Length: 113
Length: 116
Image (cartoon, rainbow over the protein chains, first blue to last red):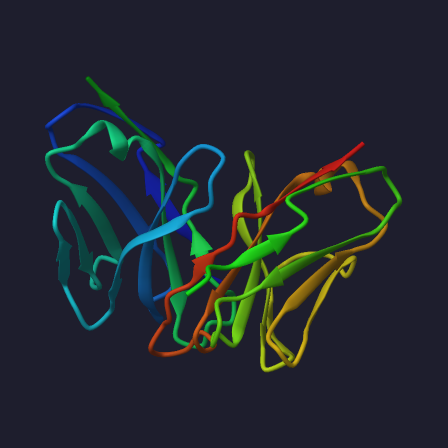
């Protein structure tokens, strides 16, 4: 089955700086890669996703890049704000969806004022 | 449009008991997936239901089961509860089942299960 590795587990950045979270996946058949943000005590919320036929996608301060050859994808947050503090999860799913979404272990992003 | 809802939000059970959790997907969504979230293991896929049929199943023992009704609402059941079953159980709904197009999954607030 799919295996998703996520780094770093904790990331502390100064407010206004950029943050980058990286994930690798093992199943070359995976073709959908969402990112979720989970604030303490709340549900995971989909913030951006990318499909395997696209190399990059942007939504305001958030962008995701995908390198299918290397089997890794990254989340980029620019001009970080205090409300960006949360745990971020990457995930992958294969075309058949046989194993559901496989999640990384999460990155705790801390925005320092 | 109302989001995904789950009931109950909190449950406390003792070892050996069984529990049933409920999930109502977003209106029009036909696929419901269940996940277990724990600090140690993170988010793990339990199973997915689509059109009242279990489509996929994760690596969990047979004590974990589920079903889906004709209105797409889903329930999951855990029998013979163990201490290690304490977790946040999340369901997610999507418009159609996972496939080549990969459809967005939207999560409910979860049910916090504590097994004593």
